[in-house]
Image 1: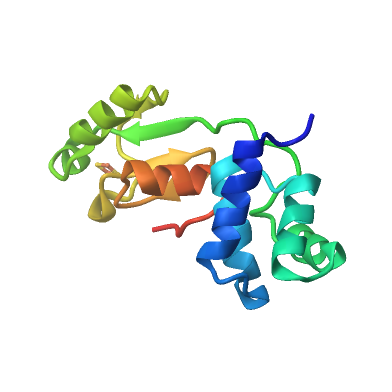
Image 2 (image 1 turned 30 degrees about the vertical axis):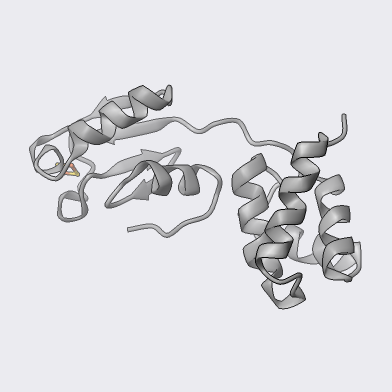
Length: 146
Ligand code: FES
């Protein structure tokens, strides 16, 4: 199944946001991965056309970095620390935001990352100073660990 017109336009907009610059390829791939949970072959074709580079160049970058996948990744389990140190810096509010957004999560008690709370695990990846955006980025395979 191909991309919808809206998804194709979204990818074009990402490329335009970076001025259709080939040197912004990694940032573009991260944005597309985050938005679509993958960088499909069709997305790679659109990006190649927009940046005026070959699909082979995109394939080289896409396959080199583990952050990128060619098919949508299943959502990863979110385990949010609800212990005292993380509660003190907003874990309860974060849990409420995730609930409002319909994002499933489960409570755990201390991930050993108390100084960088609220702390969460996305799959096996530890995320500090967690926010909905940072959790979404980590879930999509990008973002920074703390
Ligand atoms: S209290 Fe949350 S990581 Fe320790």
